[in-house]
Image (cartoon, rainbow, N blue to C red; front, side, top):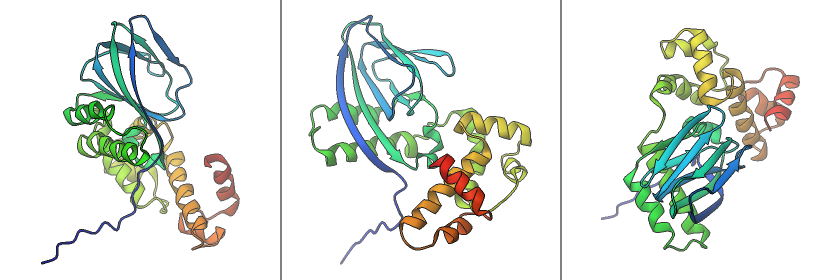
Length: 247
């Protein structure tokens, strides 16, 4: 008897530039990233204490052993070690089309035993093997994003709109349609949407459209004008303007 599992859907998480580092610091060490990093970071505090000051929200949080912190790329922060012998395990990486993962637009922190186990084991693994690093990063993201759903409670009401935008990005539905899906007023929807994604609704949708058009053009399946039309652009001048803006 043959048993077969086939995975035919395109993977939306294309991970690149993965690094892993095990760091031990003493109290008083400061790691300022006022412009953020060019990549996403997942930090597992193995032991000790470390304070993170998230500059955009002006919030400070003290993390201890067992805490897992996610910091998105280009997000400004200052890390300050507050206890001698603090040990961090850190994965840094980039994701192609990370607009498809709204939960990675803002910092979040959690306690996740499975992520803690994976990241603790990595320092004893084949950290110079790119296949090992990438596979472990996918595993960590699955547990943080897909399995644990670390979206803060206040933003979860946006889920119906986010799902609909990603499915029908090529349709020119009004914002009122999406706000009604979330049972929100249009003004509150706009405000919360920008707070969560860092973009206006139109900017978010156009970013998705441009990325999808780029894929069609690079695959040689469509001409530029056909790709623009299929992804929701009815004006080529506006399409080229968005290409320059969101590229």
